[in-house]
Length: 243
Length: 321
Ligand SMILES: Nc1ncnc2c1ncn2[C@@H]1O[C@H](COP(=O)(O)OP(=O)(O)OP(=O)(O)O)[C@@H](O)[C@H]1O
Ligand SMILES: [Mg+2]
Image (tube, rainbow over all chains, first blue to last red; front, side, top):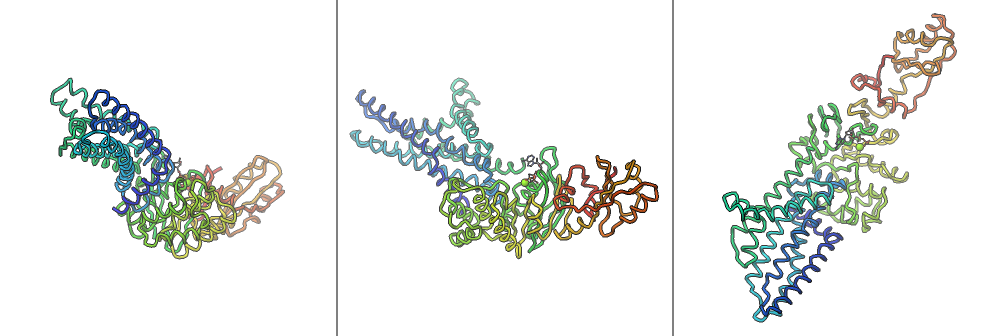
């Protein structure tokens, strides 16, 4: 526990001073700001009250594309700079390294998510009866759980590479594939389709969390994906020694 | 303290180290001396638990390095060949992080002490990215010392240091070696001689020689190399000298002179001279050559040396010409 915390704190700190993390945060706020403005204005033209979904929807997509940039360096960089050699010869277990890294990135993205609360707060001011609090909480909970699984996948993929860029694209590829894998299911519609839809990362977000519905199975799904990814990441670090 | 038995490591199909067996006691500084690619780093990586051997066992402080990896890692301090630093941290932050992974109590105090030891106290709050190569090397060393480990494994600890710091760091290692176990690797023979209690010469993954620096030197300088010049067909003299007792090898040089090497401790020059003259040759010159230590090192580890034929007792090779 203590090791995980030490590693997580170090990871969080170095993200905090990393230009990549700032560029990513800037991109998030810039794109969010533009979309927010456009959506609110659009809703005003149509004479309808904008819902909290104008924040949650774009945020989910942006996180899908930006979290690989947050995780790409976590283990790939340690590998490249040779610091992995002391990390793996310090009295720290391989899974503590992986979980610590993941927790550090999660803390950073959680902070970014926290700052995006300004949009719901603004929305709450300009919409007359205020926004639906339930949708807000479920939306953000969904985002957090989903991002946790993105980051777990990203950290694990990073352990396979010593090149950050390679880790970025591999992670993005995997996330996009898992994000769209349920799509063919709409045509298939059979048992196989059900399975694909169940694996799909987005299928557990848009129908439920996004619409303000909380379902245990979706919480379990994201926690399972996260655990599985971290487990595979730990195995990958361990087998790294044998390569 | 350290017991290594039959250690072998293959990278794919290439065998990097072959069946290494050696020990190191508490209070001993053991030096790995060998040319590039000898297998020093590979051996150290296995000792520290960074990677498993293909076969063989390593026991450190009574713990097997595979079965009780964490216990071993707790008592070992390790300076890898590529100094493991995070450029975006300050020196102090970095050492505090390393200390926290080792669950030290008095982190701040230990960091300060260790920085004093390696002479980096004045740069404690500077960013690692702004340090010079030698300074980085010293911070790397501080990282290995931070938890006052029982066993210290240092891969080329003085590389990149200026002469003053080389002296300092060697002194520091010697001090630590008084009641801890230190293994260090180097290409520099005088360094091995200066700080090590025992030197292991490794070449192509084999232990070629192992002894105290004094013994090693005595054994080697004890061996006689003699330059020999005769008038006429010198190759006819080769078989003649070869059969003499105590001769290790005879080499015919390009310029027609001969060079022989004989067992240490006995000067057989009179015998050689008599034989040559008896056989009817004119002896022009019989001059001993003093081997410099570097030469010995080269000789010990040169390419033609067939390691399995390396003489276990004497430490150099006999060859057929
Ligand atoms: N990761 C690796 N993959 C494949 N081969 C390797 C690897 N690391 C080392 N080797 C090979 O193993 C052999 C021993 O290398 P090692 O790094 O242990 O030598 P060394 O004695 O430390 O050399 P140097 O003095 O140059 O540091 C070399 O032939 C090297 O090419
Ligand atoms: Mg080396």
